[in-house]
Amino acid sequence: MDRMIYVAMTGAKQNLGQQASVANNLANASTTGFRSELASFRAVPLVGQAQGTRAFVVDSTVGADFSPGTLVGTGRALDVAVQGSGWMAVQAADGKEAYSRDGHLQVSATGTLTTGTGQPVLGDNGPITAPANSDVTIAADGTVSATQPGTPPTITNVGRIKLVDPPATALVRGDDGLFRTRDGKPAQSDAKVLLAPATLETSNVNMAEQMVKMIELSRSYELSTRLITTAGDNEKSASQVLALN
Image (cartoon, rainbow, N blue to C red; front, side):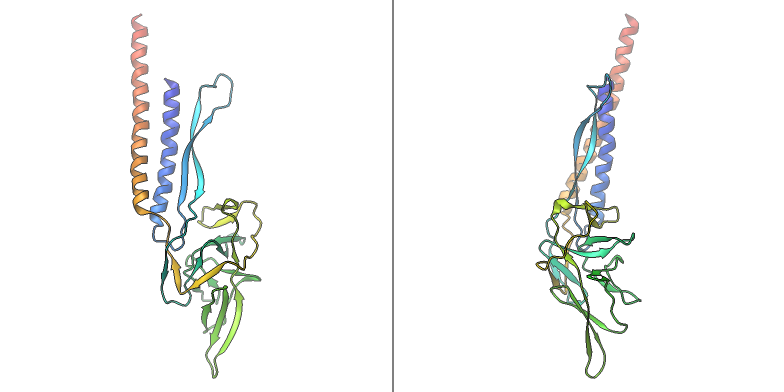
């Protein structure tokens, strides 16, 4: 009976973890450029003496769904979307390079170009900054220009967004939602990656699919808890039979 309880218990625990992933996907269904999380169950044998029949049920995080979202025109000069595969380089909270497809860009009070969630956008020489009181535009190749008022207006090239396209297998998602290379080394710039100006990419989360998955996980959790109850009842019945004998 303990084997049934062990498998059902670990299955229920990991089931809750997968429900958290699905909930995170649903919460980010409207987040610009979001990539939905993928996960699956797998069995892992328990290593140890006299435990060959035991096995863990663990949540195996496959990674992310890298299929593209839908490109939607906004007409806003600071909105950009990565066309096809590729990423924009940003500076994470720890100061290291990370990658995002959040193209809802802003200019901070200090003139730094940032993503919608506040990460500085990186160019070849670090974060890109624009002069105060200037109109910022972004070209398809990532070139950032700042136009300052005057007669005639002054147009300054303030940098070029670092665009990269490492293999999907070389990327891992962090707890902050940003992607990084598995080896921690910065990816090389790729001139083939282009941006769509005045456009945003929607999240690639399929709402209907995620809702169905949440229902399936809920039922799976209920089944695991029923197995635990059943195993306990069977053990009590077996103990009563042995007591009568």
